[in-house]
Structures are given as structure tokens and as C-alpha cells.
Amino acid sequence: MSGTDATTADSDARASAFRQAPVGMALVSTRGEWIDVNDALCRLLGRGREELLATTFQQLTHPDDLHADLEQVQAMLAGSITQYTMAKRYLHPDGTVVPARLSVSLAREPDGKPRHFIACIASAAADPEQESLHERSERLAKANVELERFAYVVSHDLQAPLRTIRNFGGLLARHADALPADGRSHLDRMTGAATRMSELIADLLDYARTAGSELEFEEVDLNAEAQAVLTSLAPDIEACEATVTVAELPTIVANRRMLRQVLLNLVQNALKYRRPGTNPGVEVLHRRKDGEHVLSVSDDGIGIEPRYARRIFGVFQRLHTRTEYAGTGIGLAIVDRVADRHGGRAWVVSEPGKGATFHLAIPVRDSSEVRSG
Ligand code: ADP
Image (cartoon, rainbow, N blue to C red; front, top):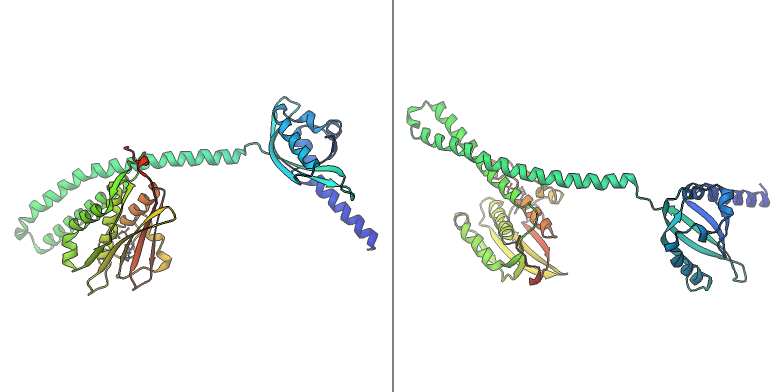
């Protein structure tokens, strides 16, 4: 191919790129006449090529958008800007309005004189796909709230028959001596399962309670909450001879019940997931960083493999069997939900055998944000 052929092929390719571009493209004179337009633009504006070339962009611009567009045109001709992008509306011959996104640059002659504008005009009509995504996510959010409510009611109502099973199990156990050996074992298993189910329901109720609409925010003295948690965990702390230290904690604006629950779940886990044969050391700390309160509970326990660091925050996600460590797999899901509801996040930093540090970061709020739900 000779040099000239190559140049011709190049310019053909450029011309066809212009003609076949999937967005509207146009060359426009400095006075506003369309010099050249592509098919996509004809389709967008609802006019044939010849028809379009006989008009100016001013004639097809929605009157309310003309001033803003002309201002940019003037600024570009004066050389104070080199390109602009704006949302504007064009007039369709069927009387409707065509919302578009316009981007314009200016081609100049070698001596710097303006030659013509190069305009790229893309439709800005709401994408029906997008709309349905939005609708779908709203529907999902609604369904979620329904589901939470359902979970709450069901778990609440399950408590009563379960209590009956446990009570009668207790009564039967009084006559255990009269039962054959396998009958006693069946009874034990039945009451064991009932107890476990009641724990599960209690935890599910706690989880369901973290849903709901508006959150109550109040001034929460974290020291007082931490002390209350330690008092309720005193039997566990004594049983494993743990050392729990709580740093000086601030008073923050948050939901009191939720923050206490987070502290309870994290300290309880720190005691539970201790290395066998050791007396756990647990620390509760706080620091303020980048507009956030970061509350941390760290332990010297069994630790977690980093690849499970996110998974354990899911509902019913556990890394151990019940015989190794008792639990329902809901504690951290609650921590995660509390973080979420406060506009924050929860995460863990850990290595197997080297303890774990759980963090809850929530935005600092001032007392003007205190509100009752
Ligand atoms: P549960 O303790 O009832 O199993 P959680 O949601 O509180 O449920 O915890 C989920 C899982 O995360 C636990 O089963 C355990 O494997 C792991 N985990 C939680 N806290 C710790 C910790 N402090 N050290 C090691 N592993 C932990």
C-alpha cells in the first residue's frame, strides 16, 4: 500500500467512526449550523439528515437551556475554556423533549481562528433497566423489613411452646429414676435440644431487634456500659480466671442498647475462644480517628484465619462445632448490624494462635443528633 493509499484508508476509517459512532456526533459551525451529523444523532433527535442540516442547534434546543449553552459557546470562542459538558434538552418533532448529555470541543485553524465545534450528544433518558433495578432494590428492602418482622414474631411465639417442652422435661426428670437407662438418655437429649433451641431463639430475637426503622440515639457512657457487661459476665470471667482491662472510655452519641450488646458479644467471645489451658487476657480500648469512634476488644485467644475474617460476621457462620465451643453464630452478625445501623463498620484483625482484635468504628455524632425513636 502506498503512503497515499494508507492516508486515504485512515481517513475513511475516521469518517466511518464518525458515521457509525453509537452516540450522537456532529460538526457544528461557529454560528450554530449543523455541518455534519451522524445516524445516531438523527435517531436521537428524530430528524432525517437533510432535515437536520437545514437547522441550527439553537432552533432545536429547549428554550430554557439555550442561554446556558450559548454562554459556554461564547466562553469557548473567547478561549477561556477548551471544552464543556452539560445536561440539556432538545426538541423532538413529535413535541416531546429529548434529555441529553452534550460535550463540545472546538477545532481551530492553524492560525488559531475557530473552525467548527465538535459535539458529542448522548441520550440521558432514564434507562428502563436502571429504573427497574431501583424498583427492585426498593422491593427487596421492603421484603427484608417484612422478613425481619416475621422473624421477630415467629421467634417470639416459638418461645411459649418451647417453654412448655422444657417445663415438662423438667417434671419428667424428677422421675428419672423410674425410667430405663435409654429413656433417661432420651430425656436428656430432648431437654438439651430444647435448651439449645431456646438459646437460638433468644439470639435471633436479639438480631431481629437490631432491625427496625428509626434508631434512638442518646449520650452513651461507654465506661458504664462496659462495667455493666463485666458485671453480667462475672461468673464466666471468674470461671476462666480471665483478666479483663477496660481503658478510659468516652461518652458517645449512639444507641445504648446496641452498644451494650456489642460489648457483651465481643467480650463474651474473647473469653470463650481462649486457648485451651490458658487464662485469657482481654482489653477493651477506644480511640478517635478520622471522625470515627473506634471501639476495640482484643484477646490472646485462638485467633482466626484471615480468610474467614469477613465470613464470621454472617448469620449462623461459625468456625467450630458446638462440642468444641458452644454458640449460635449470631453474635458477630449483631455486631455487624449495629455497625451498619450507625453508619459504621466492624472488622477483625487476627492470626491463628495469636489472638484477635475486633473493631467497631462509628461516625462521631454531636449531641444535636440525640433523638428518641
Ligand atoms: P458464636 O460465638 O455464637 O459462634 P459469633 O457470631 O459470635 O457466634 O462468632 C462467629 C464465629 O467467629 C465463632 O463461631 C468463632 O469461630 C469466631 N470467633 C468469634 N469471636 C472470636 C474470637 N474472639 N477469637 C476467635 N474466634 C472468634
